[in-house]
Amino acid sequence: MNVAFFPLHEEAKGLQDLLTNAGCQVDLSPSGSQALAADALVIAGEDSHQVLADYFSSARLDYLLDRRLAGGRHVLVVGSPMHLLFENVEDLEGGSLAQWPGSVNRRNFSEQHLRVEPSKSPLLGDLNGEPLSFPSAYAAHTDPATLLGPSPMKPPLTTMTTGKEKLVAAVENGALVGLQFLPHRSGEVGQQIISKWLMRVREK
Image 1 (cartoon, helix red, strand yellow):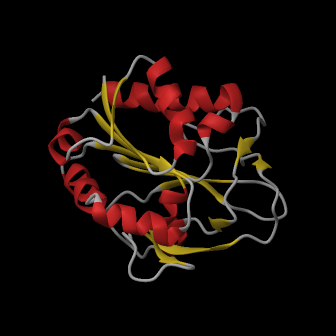
Image 2 (spheres, rainbow, N blue to C red):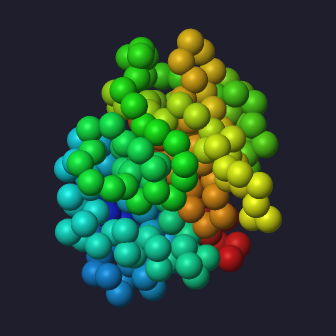
């Protein structure tokens, strides 16, 4: 399986290793044509919202993401880049990609290892209480499906964290999946989540 991978920070190398260990051929910072032709597109990294948005613009990631989603082609966005998929993003000048309604704001607590609520998610539905890594100081706190009006379209499936401050852990929206946690910092369970996602990609 060929994966076009945009690492927006050196920290994302751990996710690259997970993909490689799962048998993927990973093309780093691919050309636009490679990103569109790949079996899956992965965008990951940790940085300020403005730095990430500037990278999205310079690499035309907004265009590539829209083109892939229009064709039902798989896209995985991991960590802080997922924040740009929401309509309103704190500390961001200019617009976001606005794939989902909702806001990203500074977190009230700094706890990084959080568990998720029981979920119908094929990716996160059987974690058995294992914690996931949420290093970012910002987060989306509201299930975007609850902010959508009536629509014939299937709403996104959102998994939330437990605890004092509930965060969005993941949003699964057709071919687009966003993970607000870092699988490569989440131990064996993180690897399992990536393996499940890759199985989904292979099925189509």
